[in-house]
Length: 118
Image 1 (cartoon, helix red, strand yellow):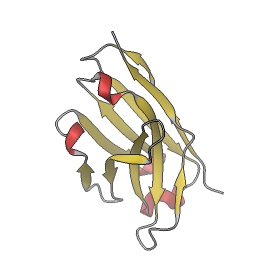
Image 2 (cartoon, rainbow, N blue to C red):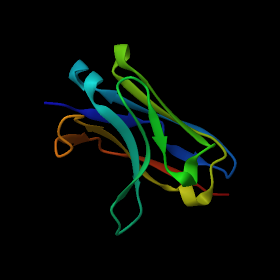
Image 3 (cartoon, one colour):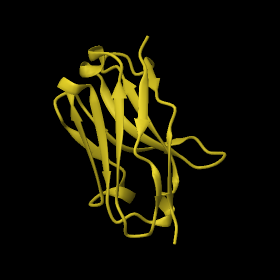
């Protein structure tokens, strides 16, 4: 069974920074596309950033230039460095792992809360 565990969320003032971490329970996910999503109340999860097993990245327009996704396959870890945070970034952030061969086969973490407020 695959397990994803997020950490690093918290309360930060606008303009501040946070670094989120996602720990995977198995090295099988080294071949998966990893992503960070966030959810607004009553809405589906929105893609924030994704990264392939080889390191190719994609970002939502709203976070380009501010957020950086990375992964350490040897450590089964995925990270999201968030800089210049805005109140609009406030959300629960979820780690996601998706098969590159079957998009319907994926795993989710439990989420970590990020609150940006003065």
